Length: 288
Image (cartoon, rainbow, N blue to C red; front, side):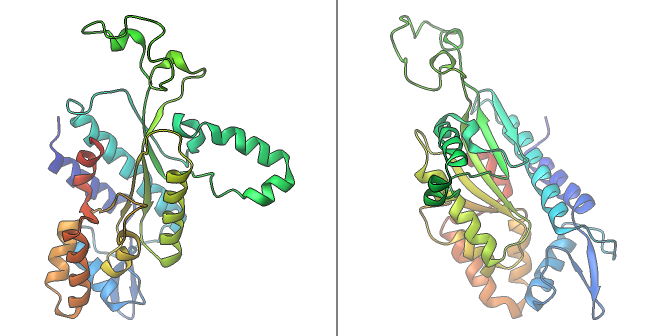
């Protein structure tokens, strides 16, 4: 079994191979997770790229939508590999999905399918309610339901059929039995103000529209500017936390750039305030 450090290194290597591309502007080479219009963004992103050993050569760019999809897939793969490695502390049958999976496929939000059917067939209802409740996370982690036999595997716990008849965790209680949404993960290769607002709106809809346990609601980003990460990370009540793909490298680079003192101050404000963590922290947080 690979270690967490090895899986993190492998994740970075795949990002460098499949997602990161470099461009040149005014003689300056910068990676595609930098904002070429911001000197600080270029400096920090270039420092992270160097620290992670990304090949530094100009190459054909990947369309933004394609880069985002690759980022989602590689992040989902990393989460699956790392969460599986610690399955002994969080056992269960888990699913890891991308491709904009609708939350109505999960037990806490199954009622939204009925609502969606009504809205689709009634124009007045559609106008009144809108479609904000139809959240489609970039990555979902879900847990399958369990049978009576699984519950009673080590010792008989459920000895009567008239007990625990309402919990969606027992597959016999619902038809069809739907998995439970364990985590909703938003992936942002870079962050702009409008993207931050979309992520927060989705998070609030997950909170307001659930029937049952609230899933983990987090975001993962490669954004180099702490000030922009702050637009997503600061505050409480919607997102659990934001995770950076290379937080240690980001801290080292910011600390070595005298011109980025304000960015460094914001960075440590988020870290010390438990609003920003490294991607390696995510699987352990999901185990809670």
